[in-house]
Amino acid sequence: MNEKELQAYIERINKKLKYYYGDAYKRMLNLPEVQKAIKKGTEDFKFSNYTTRKVDKIVAELTRIINTNLQKGIADAWNYGIDNTTNHLSNAFGRLNEDFKTEIDKTVLRATKDIRNKTKESYRIVNEKKGGLNISDRVWNYNDQIKKEMEIAIQNGIKQGKSADDIARDMQKYLNNPNALFRRVRNKETGELELSKAAKEYHPGQGVYRSAYKNAMRLITTEVNAAYREAEWASYQNNPLIKGYEIRLSNNHTILRNGKRVPFYDICDELQGIYPKTFKWTMWHPQCRCIMIPILLTEEEFASRVKARKEGTLDKWKADEIKDMPNNYKEYYLKN
Image (cartoon, rainbow, N blue to C red; front, side, top):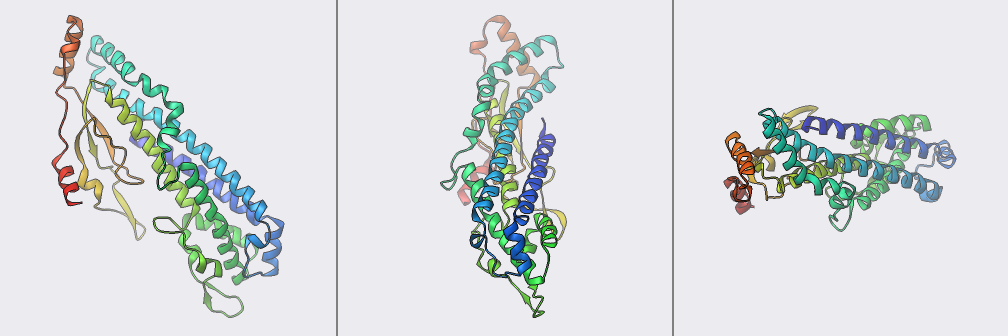
């Protein structure tokens, strides 16, 4: 699986994610206690006053589904990362002659055997704690936001005199534009624009989207990418056909501004370059889309390796590996 296919795979996971969140919103709104509160016009609606247990069950089911999809995504990406390295080598050398193809097959098999065996452990490997929380903890924390988001949506809807069906339609729109949930709405009785009580009280914290769905989407994008990069990097380590690697900017190094994709400058621009393969790179930042390209033996070096194997001198053969970090990396970390 190449870079473009990996991003398409992540998009498919996130498309399912959108459905799961939309379904959870519908189920919460369809609870009899919620329907009654909307009809009654309870402007200070809170789940804790009505049906906490049922809502917690919906959130727990959603969390389980997301964790299952995330674990599968990580395991798949792990194998895709290894496959990508193999494909690079086959495309570069496999066309040359049968001796070269045999050498690649044997070398790649040896280099990736242990990593392939770790596929089942891939979730554990990338599930390291960040800020004291592992992936499952973070999914649960993000999903705990759902109740607060729903309380805001319900309070907004009641202020405007909307029905449960109207609020359900609004929630589907909020999946694409969560900031709209925190705008002031027109009070049906006073005609004034007001912020709901739940919206005033909602402060998710620094570096966290005001949307459980957006936070989960960022988590999945980041961790599936990380698994792919981790496996890709690991497959380079015991592979004598790889001398180092280049980190390049994605072809889509853009940001959404005023509804349009525009180029931007960040750490990725600063640190692109050629690195020793021992330098462990996964990503520069969450949702980083930079790509890692292995730097392979030249055809002459590869031919000399095949010759050394035939002559029984492979133990003395060494490639001219990249050993130094790029100057821009050194300068960046001196400044920062």
